[in-house]
Image (tube, rainbow, N blue to C red; front, side, top):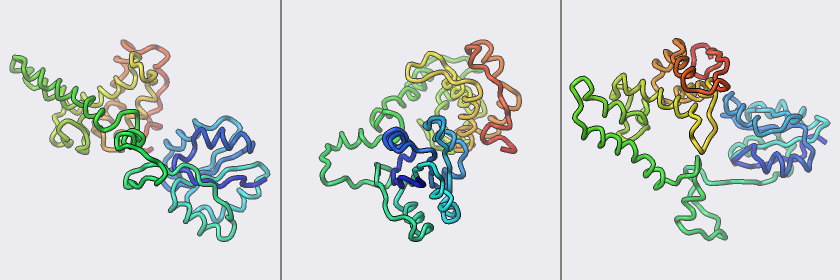
Length: 280
């Protein structure tokens, strides 16, 4: 059966691919060709979560296509090959030579830098803004409303008559959504502009939010899941890397977890498997 479908879809592996195409074709494997995903273990894990047992998922870079295409085409099981953008598709065709004759064009959705709309889709500016939200469910205006809680916190705390030893509490509390790379809010502070307590609270705030069991919009994460996400945030410039290493090495979360988390959330933590840790 070999490759039953070669598809361009910038969402890569999702329900329409797995169920809409995968089930009718009875696929046994999916090949995802993307240079960035090929080198990102945590993204690979996320994509595998969307694929049912019995379907193998292979991640490949463009440079690997020419030597692996023959094996994929000779596999007796039906398979799907996915690319996420036109440039990757062009690279795939160049690498495959004359072996690719038909492409299924699926979702080519909004992404930064792409502003053109299809001429036959008539949307108001408000509709377009809401249909092009990349992450979560809030548009830019709604996100600004949510972000105001920090500015409100600062104003409220600064209005209180703090004793001298506590006078910097507004600063510490008001910086919990700042990022060490300067991409946070409300002030866009960088690491050297944030105090040590503020950087500590930023890590504690994320850990508490991830493991909290009282959030209606998400399930409570386990300790290992929360640390893995924090590790990615360290790599992306969100939290202080040195403080995060201390947080993991000294097992700072243990007392908090014992006091406030459901026992089912307190799982085994392998520090060497946490993204961003030395040696990983």
